[in-house]
Image 1 (cartoon, helix red, strand yellow):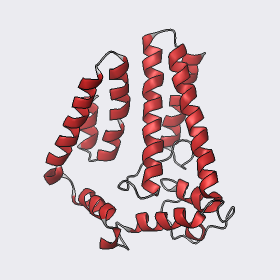
Image 2: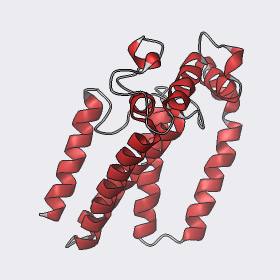
Image 3: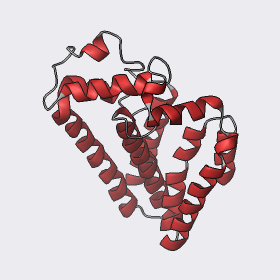
Image 4: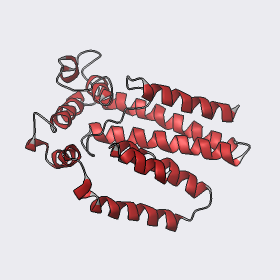
Length: 214
């Protein structure tokens, strides 16, 4: 896994490389690695991330700068965060109604059918709509973990737990991203964002979990 993380990060695609870490740490914990060691690995990665700052690409640094202060480039790198927060905030409790979101329907929100699909949902269905979708994701992940518990062998259990951890990270990061709580990263929302390879990979992963359950 470490080799894959390094290779993907060198593409450069630091975000996708980070997505490989939650499944790895989950399987390491289930395989018997002590929590103290896992925390040590996590802290080590945090420290290394600070040392990696000089080696980041310009666009990666810009994303971090505009995450901290999107007004630095409101029409460029900070545009997505600003428009997403407007969409999420304007939805309120019940939303504006299907197809009635100004940010999404008038084209102000970039990538509204892929990475920022949750912003559209927040604007048109409101807080209750987002809560319902996140509840379905929670049920989905719980069923995966239940499948891991029911697995007849360690390989099946590790596989289901790793897939659940990967999906959980994507859901949490994407949700935090559209709310402006983390830097913008091209990370789709599983089974909700429009896409090709992402949807294919998600369906293959679900198929593997169903196979273990059967």
